[in-house]
Amino acid sequence: MRGAGHRSEQAPSARRRTGDPARSAALAVLRAVDDGAYANLEMPKVLTRHDLSGRDAAFATELALGTIRRQGFYDRVIETGSGRAPSQIDPVVLAVLRLGVHQILSMRVPVHAATSETVALAREHAGSGAAGFVNAVLRRAGERDRETWIADLTRSVDDADEVRAVATSHPRWVVSALRQSLRGHRAAGGDGQASLDDALDALLEADNTPPRVSLVARPGLATVDELVASGAEASDLSPVGAVLPFGDPANIPAIRQTRAAVQDEGSQLLALALADADVPPRTASGDDAREDWLDLCAGPGGKAALLGAVAHLRGDVLYCNEASEHRTDLVRRTLRALLDDGAEIYIGTGDGRDLGREEPGTYDRVLLDAPCTGLGALRRRPESRWRRQPSDVAELSALQVELLDSAIDATRAGGVIGYATCSPHPAETLAVVAEVLGRRDDVVQEDAWPLFRDAFDEPIERVGDLPSVQLWPHLHGTDAMFFALLRKK
Image (tube, rainbow, N blue to C red; front, top):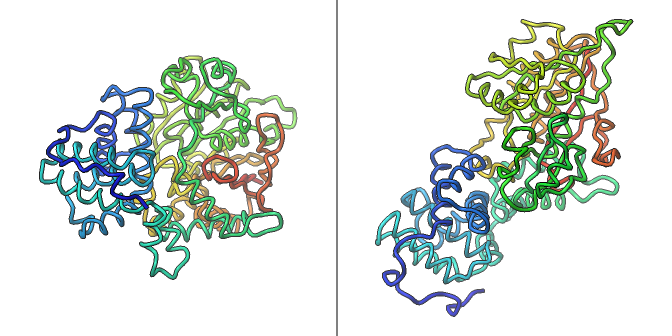
């Protein structure tokens, strides 16, 4: 427990009157997220606007993203320390308080420094009255360490998963969903596996661990060696991947030129898996060797770019579809280097649910990276856990079924469909595939695991005994990507 000796006794009025640039940048990100922005997209813009780099940029990034990840827990601390529900606190003041509590309970910032700097931030953005309130709440927050706060806040809680929800700052329904996911994909509790409780604890902790900056070298446009020469390290997991241990990826020429990109290694692996699946030629003679590939929900374009690069090297054609013009434009920008290199790629806008009916039996390979809750990417999209609701699962799974039906309809006999989500929720993954397979006799599921091979061309260790692949942050170091391989009869 921290005592008074660790806190500043300096009166708020005697401290400096403005927040430092890194903390001001973090506050700007929190306010933008409150207004509906995505933290991972907003962060680079704010760092540029505040002219931050190096250690200051790293501090601002951890402060903003870490605060958002643990926001639910911090709100309980703030409510206890202030005697007010978060909804009764001015939004700017609440954001400032969250930043201060994160520094005190989860960062290596001395309590007196965190309090002083956060009070200055409050004074600059909300006035002297708010600064005094912030000072008082942060002093109370600093009287206990994080473990003591967790113990105190959960002392009367009997439900073990509710305790987990508080301790790891996840909504209770998300904890239940992830428990369901581990059980459904048989990723815990089996021979040689961790117990379900231990696996759940590891997964929740992984959600709160900042992900590595993973890069992809788009084949034919860039190489892993080029990324390594720019300061990255070769990935052990993806044959086209690298990891940037520090620095801004935008400083790498290949990334600025869209020959390479920031992309989770799990996303890389599933795109390569679809590209490597065996597809028989359209004719017995094999004369018509060129394949037509489709990315049915292509935005913002990361997987489409990797598929397009592989297709271009093979002389195949990629068609990209998106439901909105805005996301279609994102795909065009992402694929700029490929298009400049002469790749045969066609990008259009339309409802993916209609494409199968409009273009039946057309494509050799179809990727359906379906809209989903994103429960597998909570470490990367920290605000998602607070925005999603349990009702979203049912709404999205209904859409996913319609899109998968359309993807199958658009695939020719002998062709393959890769169904992917960045959610492990059984209702969005296993149940969607089971529903479609249960009422269609023109498609079968195949074992996708042999297609997942690491940077040394070794098979990735299988988790569970299902034919679908489910990757995990705590086991593979990737987002929790799901992939099922289907073949049209």
